[in-house]
Length: 341
Ligand code: KG4
Ligand code: ZN
Image (cartoon, rainbow, N blue to C red; front, top):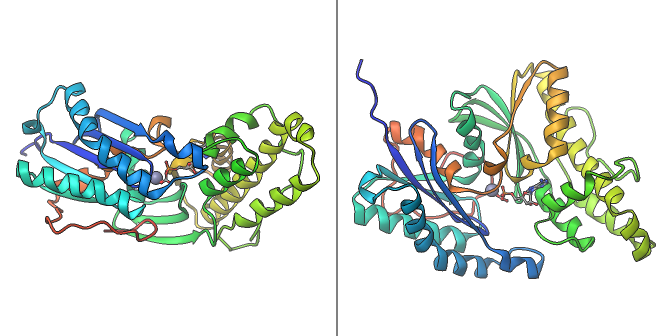
């Protein structure tokens, strides 16, 4: 039988506040993955969309040249271009899509459109190239919280999703209330390591049987109310206990709903994806709870949890094999969620 030729994909990610360029080959080996995180937004406690677009525009060419040079490749070595087209900040996505289209046109290479959330899921295949559905995915990022049941990569159902804030958004907004900085998730994770998660009981909403939806905006309000009569000295003294209690509430919601669906439906494999999959407590608790119900749990390597172009390239590999290419009228969409383009 004829062996498939190895191929290389140059991938772009500009959906939010990270400009990223990567090259990945058909064996899911990442040859280079550069990420330029836009620290400008820290001053605003959240991403300013127009600034994000302008910074992508400023950085993307330089980052592409640097990536090609680090991987010791020329554009001739590249077989296809991949780019995230949805969901995300529309202006930010348009920078990546326009750049990728221009490059594809001038080089005469095919272009592959990637759903950013599917990209997060494919990040798991960088370490585990053979990880294929059926599996249950908990997708947790700054803009999304979804439990998705995958029968195949093209055939899936959304089992539950957030009714208001996403899990990452909850970490970010609560960290802002506590003046801890942005993005909040990694900071809360760090502070919580020395804290007592039972220090204060924050709410776990929609905690009913067979309800797989999430809600995190009440938690934010509850933290705000909790802080009302606390002095700055008290907050400073107990910051680790407070963050640990908040983190425990978010993780309990994510884990209990995922595990309860998995148990009821005899799921054998669970994967976690998106920026919040970097959370140390989530990784620990879902692995332990998964083990108890006989399910194996997978996460991306830490370096591929947050937004990066390697995961966009990873999601393009199977599309390349079946020549699922976009044409040059390709556009960006802000449409939410895990979806087939
Ligand atoms: O997937 P991602 O990089 O961007 C989006 O697609 O939104 O996710 C970013 C989110 C942010 O809300 C950030 O606070 C959160 O992921 N995050 C974490 C951790 N690292 C990043 N949340 C909790 N614990 C972490 N260690
Ligand atoms: Zn993301």
